[in-house]
Image (cartoon, rainbow, N blue to C red; front, side, top):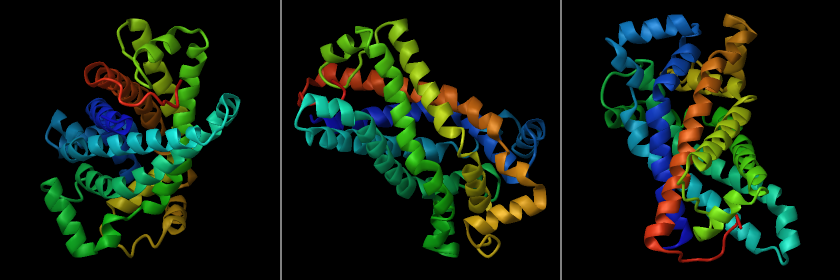
Amino acid sequence: MQLITYDFISGCFGGACGILVGHPLDTIKTWQQFSNHKIRASVYNIIVRHNGMAGFYKGMFFPLMTSGALNSVVFAVYGEYMRQLQAQCKTERERQQSWPKHVLLAGSVAGVTQVFLGCPIEVVKVRLQTLRYIGRPWRCLMDIHRIEGLSGIYRGITPMMFRDVLPYGIYMLVYEYMLGIEERLHRVKRDRLSSGSGGLVVSSPYEASLIAMAGAMAGIISWMFIVPFDVIKTVMQSETDPTVHKNMLHCCRTLVERHGWRSLFRGSFMVIARAAPVNSITFLGYEWCLGQCHKFFGNADKTSYWS
């Protein structure tokens, strides 16, 4: 098996873990942005309108079935493009000097993949979470395409570009840098090398806490400056009438005029609160599964961008 296959399998597993942990917080965040309510009012509305605690998991099935595979593609694109960039370097010194730039670039390319594959998933998730559609996820997707066309499926793609492309590069750079700090202490580097290439065998609380901390920091830092784009994306995707919001700037101006500039940061607390556990468990699941792939299937390719 090739390294890109390991990335694919591990990304799928890590993505599914992240969704299971973070969906209730994501539902609160989405409802805040959609209704411009505070946390307490949003929680109340979710429970009342969705008939109990199950409301926090409204719309989870579709992301769980699709975002795991989406996450695996994103990790696979990142891993393969990173290896290609590093392979172009002629010396080890050049590889080390170009490493941050390569991580940022590979992460941004993975972010583009995330946007084009993930936008339809986001639209369906938001419609189900905000009760703009009552029914099954696949039926929701088909109805959106039938009524609103392809533009309906990709509504909100512009703010998603601003939210996911460069920030995803920053996300991966922060994660790799946090692990790099510990690699200088030799222990994690030794474990990674012993597992072949790029796979960390999570076998101790120390290793697990390190990955969790790195993932949490990556998620928090990458989300700190992009909340307004996430708010605009949610508002645009929850709207079923395509004439209400002409574009991203029009939606932004409408929100500010109607609710004030603070509405652009609605849901910030839930975004940060969600970023830490979700990204921790996503990377922990990814690294654990990647290590298991190397353990059970062997090492098909000794070339690694981590070593």
